[in-house]
Image 1 (cartoon, rainbow, N blue to C red):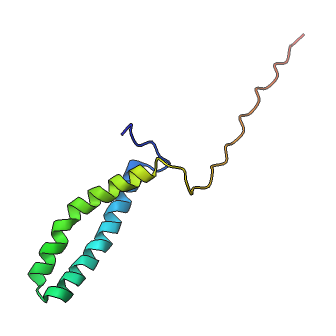
Image 2: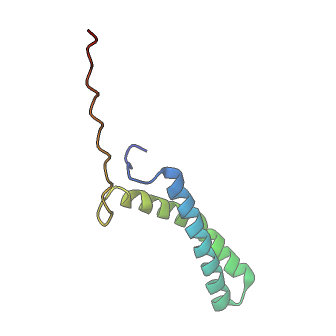
Image 3: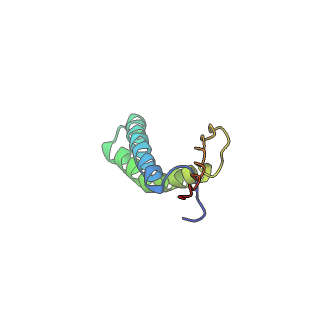
Length: 89
């Protein structure tokens, strides 16, 4: 996307979103099971929120990638000077 030109690639942000959401869904399932004592209800709660939260996290990451606040500046390699041309006499 042209709108998001951060320091992190789109596939990396998406992979992070999926891994985070997996962990979050396990947590949601366990909490749903704890409060409802019903595996079906806990599964329905956990599976319903997966897609929306992946998309929200992905968008959130890409938005944060637009801001340099809190990031260490990247060292820019100096541009090598052009070699002096030698004249052959």
